[in-house]
Image 1 (cartoon, rainbow, N blue to C red):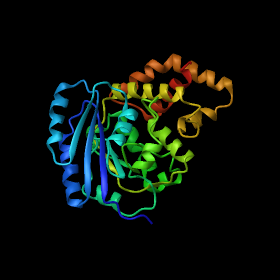
Image 2 (image 1 turned 135 degrees about the vertical axis):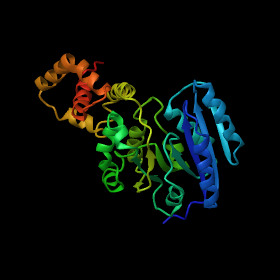
Image 3 (image 1 turned 90 degrees about the horizontal axis):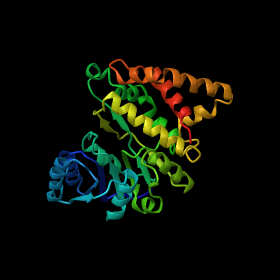
Image 4 (image 1 turned 90 degrees about the vertical axis):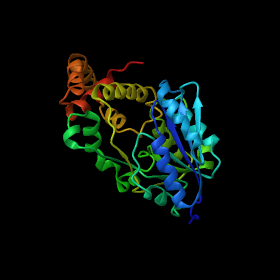
Amino acid sequence: MEQKKTELSILLPVYNTVCTDFVSQLQTIAEAAGIDYEIIVADDGSTDAACMSQNRSISQIPHCRYIIKKVNSGAAATRNLLARESRYPWLLYLDCDMQLPGPQLLTRYLAPLDAPVVMGGISFGGDPRQLRSNLRYRYETAEAHRHTAERRQRRPYQSFRSCNFLISRNVMLSCPFDERMRRYEDVMLGKQLRAARVAIAHIDNPVLMTDFEANPDYVAKEELNLKTLHEFRNELKGYSRLLTLVEGIHISLVRRMIVLLQRLFGPAMRRNLCGPHPSLTIFKLYRLGYFLSITN
């Protein structure tokens, strides 16, 4: 059993988001934990000058540093940069558009645990009455049962997500994020960790997501995700439920019919998803049809 962690680098990639309050909360929690720590924020080539101006004050907070990248190179490259810039043996990666549950986020990670990678998970909040027309909120809450620590631990590598995890610095430097990928880089890292036989422990220590993009933005983002998944489909085989579903469709006629239906009804389905009454059933059908319609 490893010793309790007492030296921690907290690493935050950021893009066009003001995260000064988030960093201040983390700094207060870390001070109360009585550990040696640093908080490093890396700006991935933001285009919002107002956000960057406010975030520059982060460097005035004790033990905190704000790094500005001139070129947007993606989350994978930014997280790798943060690992190289860190100084402590344990790295805690967080997405700064989440909400912290409280001081227990650090105390649970700092407890002794015999694993070089620990994933805390994610939970979803907000007023259901105000968010009932939001596609992202409806989809994430419907899938929330898959995010419990128990469920994640059944498939520890396939369940890896990068928004909230602790990792040994040595492991991160030897097994970095794949910088070819602008999306699914966390899924690829899960595969790489499995290949390297690095153990992952999943615990119940979630950050909270309460900010959900508008329906048209979410649909557009998902379409980009599907293009990335298609590009790397051979490498991500076994690490995506959609890929597993597609591989299970062995009859070519069925695939052609799905593509035909996408061409005929795809625009109408997209209008539903972008509108005030999005259907999760249509969302799943649209994703499948869109993926099968992508050509090399």
